[in-house]
Picture 1 (cartoon, rainbow, N blue to C red):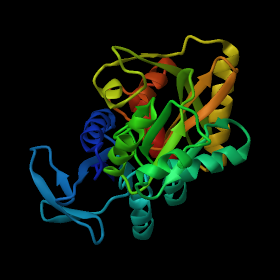
Picture 2 (cartoon, rainbow, N blue to C red):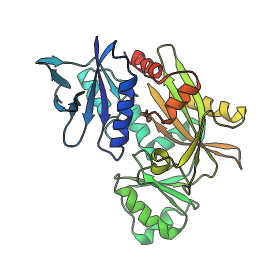
Picture 3 (cartoon, helix red, strand yellow):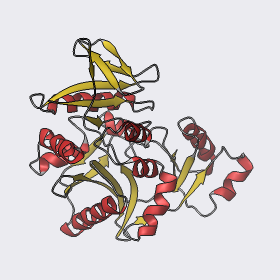
Picture 4 (tube, rainbow, N blue to C red):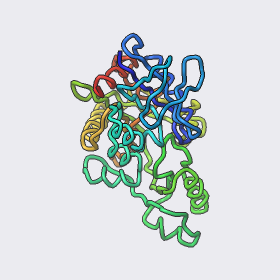
Length: 328
């Protein structure tokens, strides 16, 4: 049987989210077809999380583990690391050097799409979807420089780490006095910060899956934050402070537009594996705005992509098998 490394964890604020996703995927994989090993990426070290809960060493020189005195080499890495180093291309480059195939986008696409400040201009250049005006900051500005930096933007603004996920350290800024504290918070998570004009409208997500036979565009989900949350922040994502409607209750025209744009972006960005695209639909101006690409979207039982797949009649087990077949 082939050996699969189910790689989870990571170095970002999404570490625990990744562990949760990884454990869910582990339960769904066909253990009669594959030997599946949970491999955890942690700043303190990389290790194999054995079924007995013990942390067993992993050799990072060749990405192998020892099982009953035998060296286990992996035929595939099923990457479920959100954030650094899974979504930014670092792991992909490492596995490329070792010659181990993996289930996600390649190094270049991962690194590009993970950095919102670099990805947004590329997506805008395609001409298939609108992108909100923004400013990329490379260092914390002096208070006197703030007004000039955002002079071409209109409040409210979103301030977020340029490379990050799960809305960690992301703030909606309504007044100028809130801007500098929000920038300082975002700089705690990343070395570059994106200040982006807020687009008012309905938030939609759409997953796309690459298979051996082609691409499958999943149903659209609408995200409706509740209980005082103005946007889909970390608590809304993971603590139940949002309503996620799948399939989205919107016109067929909007659904088809979102799915068509998602399909085109998947191809134009050279995506692979399971990917989710996030948008804001400006209802007042009938205009779709691109938010971001999630090249390793959450895979917990309540995550958006598994729900979209189930709405299409695809079980999580089938979804992950598609990813494995395509990667191998």
